[in-house]
Each structure stands twice: as C-alpha cells, then as structure tokens.
Amino acid sequence: MFAESPLHPQAPLQASEEPYAADVLEQLEADAAAIVARYPQKRSALLPMLHLVQSVDGYITGRGVHFCAEQLELTTAEVSGVATFYTQYKRHPNGDYSVGVCTNTLCAIMGGDQIFDELSDHLGVGHDETTEDGKITLERLECNAACDFAPVMMVNWEFFDNQTPESSKQVVDRLRAGEQVAPTRGASRVCTFKHVSRVLAGFPDGLADEGVGAGEASLRGTLLAREQGWTAPADGRTPPATDTEATPQAQGGGVERGGYGSVNAPGNEPDDLPETKEDGQ
Image (cartoon, rainbow, N blue to C red; front, top):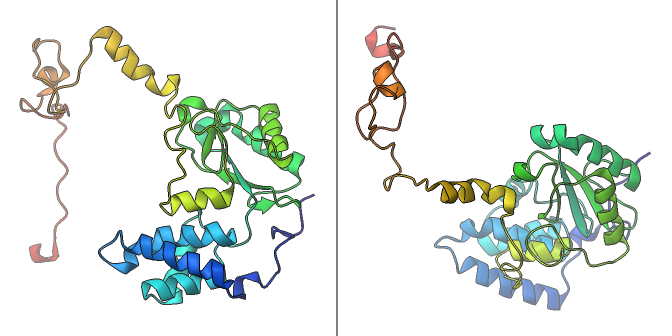
C-alpha cells in the first residue's frame, strides 16, 4: 500500500558521506560564521546550524553533522544527539513539501484523522514517508497551535485552516503539479522545505510580513473585549472586588487584596509537606 522506502529516489544512498562541493562548502562556511557571530558561545548556534545544513541537503546528513561539529567545536555525538531529538530535523531525505495533518484532540474530532487517512490513501504513503516523485512528505502532527481553525493542516509550517479531505487533496495535487499555492494565512505562497530551512537558520526571505498572521477566530476575544469595554488590570492581577457579597473570595475565605484570584474554601487546608530525612525518616 505504501512506498517501500521513504528515501528520495533522486538521492544517492551514500549522499550523506559525500564531501560538499567546493563552492557549496565556501557558502556554508560563510553562513555558519554569520550564525556563530550571533551567540556568545559557539555551541549555542547548533540549532540554526542544523537548519542550515538541512537547507542544503534536505535532511541531516552525515557530512552535515561533521560540518556542524567542526564549526562549533563539538563532538559528532553531541550534534547527532540534538539532531535526533527534534522532529523538525529529518533523518532521511524529505520531500519538497512537508504536509503535516494535526490529529490532536480538537482537530481529530473535527476531522483531522479522516483527513490524514484519506491523504495517506491518496498519496500512497504513511507517516513520515515521501511520495515517489519526492514532492510530498506526509506527517501526523500532535498540534499545529491553531485549535480555533480546526481541522488544520500545515505545509512547510504555513497554515491551511478549516480543512476537509477534499480541500487537503487539492492542495497536495497542486503542489505536486508545480503550482504556486497560497496558505490560508501568512505568506503569499508556500516555499520549499529547503527554502524554509534556511529561513529557520536565521536568514530572512522577505516574506515575514506578508498576509495575516492571526485570523478572525484568533482575534474574536480581543474584539469582544473592545466592544464591551473590558480591560485588564494594569499589573495583571485580579482587581479588588467592589461587591464583597458577590465574590467567591468573600464567600470562601478569599485571598488578600491584589492576589491572583485563587480560593481557599473552608476546610480546604494546604497539604502537609512530606517529612524529610532530617525529621527522622
């Protein structure tokens, strides 16, 4: 049912061990120097450096690990440990477009599981597998941080809100056909995985201010507060109550003026602290 291997068919199997071409290495070293210069310690630059080598190779290669280690004076074990911890760093060739379908609670019950299943059948790949043309890598994502637009799909971390199985299949078909596709919010077009990896390494592409970052659903609370004239206390704390009979604090013992609104009801005494060895345990 699924592709036998998630490897990009156009990538030699030993590509990770091949040395970089001289011109590629020269550009990598210049970019690495710019990244390292942002930090007081070289090792702090590892995360963007991994994105940098991923922007060249399309995933974290053996040669990329060695490059990061040499530039940052780390061991290859230290670099590999970080690269294998975070899911944004790919361990095998990735497609031009990472299509992530949120299947966490809200998106799942709104149709996320069905979207993933139908996309999987449509593309002929499973989780973290890549289509034979090297265009699409399909992923299950735990959360896209956009629950107010559920079900949500992301393509190279650009939002596609309020998706259906049909709309999601149209998106991947257009991407595979080489068409320019615009996300629901944000930039005017979806860029390739390598392009976005370079942006994540800290090299702006000029698209950050395009489009709308927060949609109507995200701003609804702010607009409602404005309409109703609601404001938050200047110091972020719960304001003193004006009607002591109506407040749960007054009824339940309350907290001191200026507190954060927790309620200590009668009989709700603090838990006893565990005894320590000094107490004879």
